[in-house]
Image 1 (cartoon, helix red, strand yellow):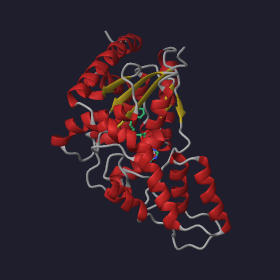
Image 2 (cartoon, protein in one colour; image 1 turned 90 degrees about the vertical axis):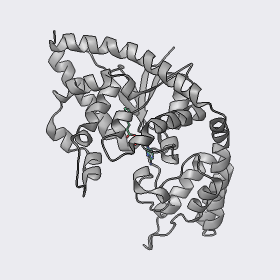
Image 3 (spheres, helix red, strand yellow; image 1 turned 120 degrees about the vertical axis):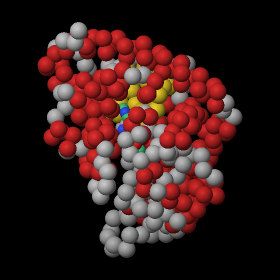
Length: 325
Ligand code: TYM
């Protein structure tokens, strides 16, 4: 029996998944698909509101879908789709525009961060959380597995569900957020910032980059910030998090003891993180190599068609409820 409905999405802004996406969200997507009816979406309309490469976008959607399948998203169980194939996403977003307050959008920290010092800030960047709310509510989602950078957007989504229900009668469920045990993976080059594609090459590790490159990024991870405190520095904490996610408990405990006893060697910690991470992602990398892009395209088209059938029912009801002819 399904416990409920999942929707989650990822922007195809780079050609592959990074460790933050994987440990913060996708690992949960894979785990939860046995218990929930799940829809996972490449949110290409969310990718076009900041600078992007139009010649690469379509391939990025396909490549990221292939990455997700390699991670274990099972298209027999779950729907894998892309946003622009289901126009009901943008249709519902327009309707939600009418019930979203300008002030609520202004409070979104992601908007504040992304618009800072930019010469051109698109209205799309400001309205981004409305489209995200439409993505979620279109499918009567009950659970949204995301990293903690998306919490505020899901909170806004709950608010929109409430506002819609109070104006037009009960219809939308209020979705909950689910986190993994690592909802915020930090950049190894700057452990006070979240791992992200937008900070630049050295700030993220892709699941599919060369082992040499992964090794050199981990080897050059910042460990000391220069501040003298008794607490573990953010960089060391980050390495311990990656070790916990990838190594057996006994290995982790051994390094923790070394740390407490003051005998920890950073190089040994880094090499252990590298070794265990690479063995964790090895099977994913292998599955990805053997994948046919025609098959990925078929999976996406089929998933989008199945999603659209559900979306059309919601839009029809929403239009009736709000008084459209
Ligand atoms: P996006 O594409 O930035 O990231 C995809 C997922 O990866 C998580 N994530 C992280 N988790 C932990 N540590 C990190 N360093 C890290 N970096 C990224 C994100 O939290 C996210 O779960 N707005 C969304 C996409 C979206 C969406 C939706 C999500 C559009 N519609 C509806 C859920 C439901 C985004 O930009 O994610």
